[in-house]
Amino acid sequence: MELGLKGKVVLISGGSRGIGEALCEAFAGENCRIYFLYKSNSDLAKQVEKRIKETYDGVFIQGIKADITNSLECESVTQTIVDKEGSIDILINNAGIIQDGLFLMQSAEKWESVIKTNLFGNAALTSAVALSMFSNRKGNIINISSTAGIIGVKGQTNYCAAKAGIIGFTKALSKELGMKNIRVNAIAPGYIETDMTSNIKNLKDISTNIPLRRLGLPHEVAKTAVFLSSDAASYINGATIVVDGGLTA
Ligand code: NDP
Image (cartoon, rainbow, N blue to C red; front, side, top):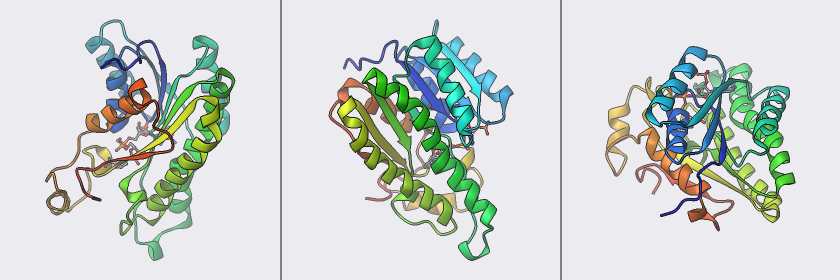
């Protein structure tokens, strides 16, 4: 199937690890031009760049250190890319954090940081990028939510609130930007094998509650993002696609 992604400029937040790294790789496989953001670990980002360049001959990929909770940094990164490329065709809001704990024991700081990164940060980056998409009258935005935004998870009130917020954000924004030929969709992954899930103690019990009896792999989420941003999904807008092995079925 022709996906029509060759040469598209893609910006991925949180691209240095986990699902974000798999997103970089999946779009490299489609011959896109890739920029990814990360917050702190420059060595890891350099390794991702190097590995993907070696695997996909001639592909352009560049990691940029930027904190999505800082609106000015979001604007400056966007401007740099748009000045160089003319446009950003695809934005994937993937960066996210967890700060788990039972609600009554949780500090205001933990609540604030989870909402600030997972909700406000993704909105700040979208705001900068969507402005240029608006002028170009084309674009594609994919927000990485979570099944935790659909069903509640004990110990994750802040994360569940942020990820449910991302689904609402996606729906509302799809109604604002659709008329400018910009599609906005969300992906809600279930449990995926990354650093984020590596410290969960009862993973074996969790797996037995998943109909496919295993955790998902980062590339299984990334492939969904490739599909959603392609011509094959040209009439999908405002949707949330669940990628969870049947967990929430
Ligand atoms: P990881 O913890 O493996 O990676 C997180 C990435 O986000 C890193 O690249 C990190 O950069 C970056 N990041 C964090 N905060 C910021 C920030 N303020 N500014 C810029 N970059 C930032 O996460 P996953 O790959 O597991 O998750 C990716 C997304 O998928 C998240 O939104 C997560 O909530 C969601 N998700 C994950 C699931 C899972 O089971 N893993 C399930 C459902 C949803 P650095 O390393 O430099 O700090």
